[in-house]
Image (tube, rainbow, N blue to C red; front, side, top):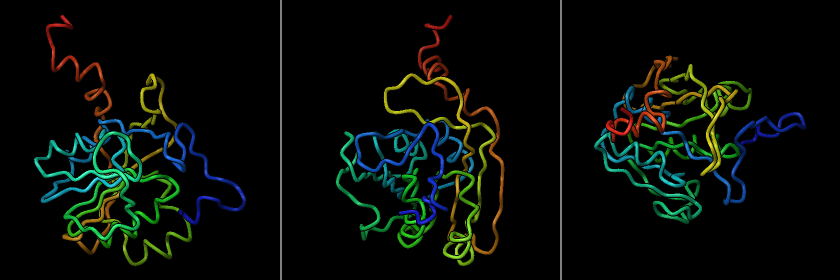
Amino acid sequence: MDSTYNLNGGFKPTLKRFADLEGPDYFPTPEWATHALIDNERFEGEIWEPACGDGAMSRVLEQTGCPVFSTDLFDRGYGEAGVDFLKADRVSDNIVTNPPYNSAEAFVKTGLAQARRKMALLLRLAFVEGANRQRTIFVETPPTRIWVFSERITFYPAGAVQKGSGTTAYAWFVWDKTDIGKSEMKWLPLGYKNRYSAKAVAESRNPMLFR
């Protein structure tokens, strides 16, 4: 549990996405957000996606050419179900995921112990804040790179009509064990949302339908 999730008696706002405490509700990661990561970070070796949901992120990660191992605590029809990442003793070359809100800090600590090369977590940009995280994470194990989204990500329940725009800033936090010694904040290029929208993907696959 993220020990700062309930801060000063009030819960952090989650807006259009909330912590998946019971399992039946989940919010797949828009594929454009994962493309933004793999276009700017190179991965070598196996990638473990430990909160794979319906495979939205895993399918994009497969485009790196790396083998992708997908698990989830709940059975959502993709990957290996019933695997609690926070208790698993498995290691992998890379770990890439969008962790549940209420377990973000625990995912950082567990992932750092289980990733040989890189760990990339999609987190709220506000994750950089907080006295507790400064003491428990950032002093000893700061991220190597923080890739900030200039375009806002909106998370929708699976199957929901996607419209509008989110109001929360997100970033990819990358811990690179092959590049230790400094932390950088970078900004992702604009255009990913439009490039990988459902219509754009459909048009690229069936151009004649859009003429």
